[in-house]
Amino acid sequence: MAAESKSLISEIGSDCGLVSESMRTLTVERAGLFQIGLVFALIMVAVWTPHGRVNAISNIGAAFCILWFTVRSGYSVRELGLARPGSGVAVMLVSGAFMLLMIVVAGSVIQSLGPAQTVPWLRAWQYAFWALQQEFILQSFFYVKLESLVGSQRALFGAALLFSVAHLPSPVLTLLSFIGGLLFCEMFRRYRNIFPLGLIHATLGLTIAASLPDNLLHHMRVGLGYLSYRPWH
Image 1 (spheres, rainbow, N blue to C red):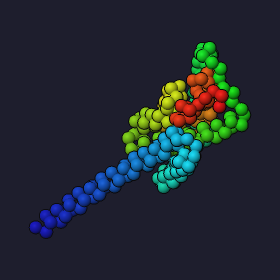
Image 2 (image 1 turned 90 degrees about the vertical axis):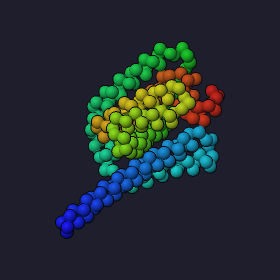
Image 3 (image 1 turned 180 degrees about the horizontal axis):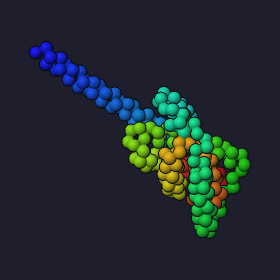
Image 4 (image 1 turned 135 degrees about the horizontal axis):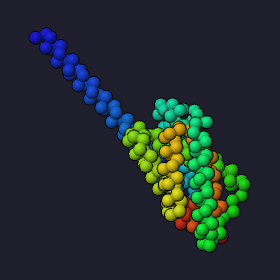
């Protein structure tokens, strides 16, 4: 009887351990989904509100949450793509050069639709820095968190979808950001390195601005800025 009691207690303890582990996993998943949803919501508020208090608060809030959640996540610098700046550089640069060529060719084909915008050097450097930040948000935050929740393949499409939705309602940038998001996330999945991706992102963005008609791009604006754009601004 004593042996049976010990066995029963052991089974109960094992079942409780499984339940406890399942509860912890569920809590982590819910926390991850909440963090993704909160950051994306703040980004969308920033994209769709005019310059002012709400816009500033949403921008600052999104930046703070991204940094805070990332630091608290426990992911290593390698998992975040910050530890191996030389990983996959050659492959990524060749892929980026091919995409750049495609954009230039597309621009030459549709140049009759209107002139492209002029991109001053100061804005080019500012955009290059912003492109690296976007890659950190896309890869080191959204992709990494989605990967831990739904796996690498689904995370690839999920992160690319979020990236493209953030570029609405610009039809050109929404389409290009989805395609680019898929390619960027796949390269990140393979090589875990955001630094060359930031460089490629910046080069492609500036090439798009300088090659495609500005009446389609509205000065590369998205959200409310795209709708309120006037050519004389």
